[in-house]
Image (cartoon, rainbow, N blue to C red; front, side, top):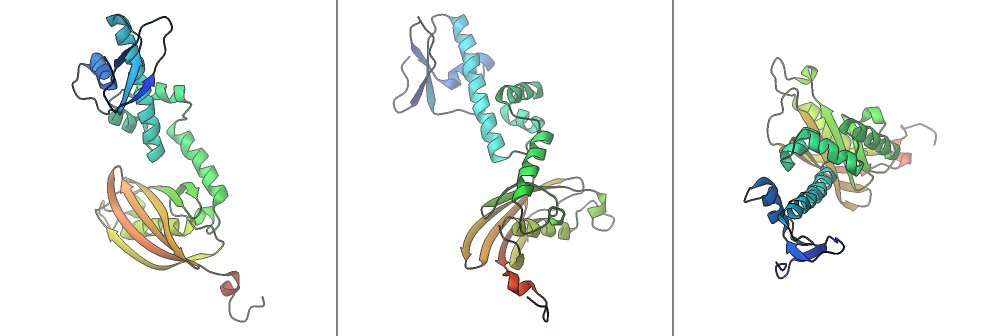
Length: 253
């Protein structure tokens, strides 16, 4: 079988064998007998096989490589995904995901979070680490930042299971300040929307992105989600304050 016209090819070389082409969705169907794979890639794989047994073995290898690529892509977009979440998205068992992580040299979630937090803390300038509401786990100054907050009963609104909105705002505003690489940053203005209720026990994931800037003012967008559902959207204008302006009236400079 020849690769489809316009489809990019990747060769898998097996010495002393003839060549034919097999699409990854065909390889997937051999393994699972399903007509539609959970994900496909625009690539044809040139393989060397002359019998069904070798074809199935090679199909497994192709499918594994595709799963590894998708796993890396998912963790690149959200490094805080659990093994259970990854297993659901990739339609694989949790044990398979753990084996894939080991093969790719990817640490477990707790270790990933610790390493990311250490790196982010070393880059933090505008706030102390304990001033950030939630846990700062990734930071690229003046570009973007990532934090998480595990909610509990002390954050509830009155005697309900709803989370008080000021905890959500504090998480967003502190991240908007933290993402700016300067010694003194304050919030100038904010426009926020609470898109859906947040409940006690939810894990909030906040992502800040720095947009345009003019002089000492920066526009920072912050989105907070629970799992894949967006709960909060904020647009902050934060201001870098010169050191001279931070002194109290009458203080000597």
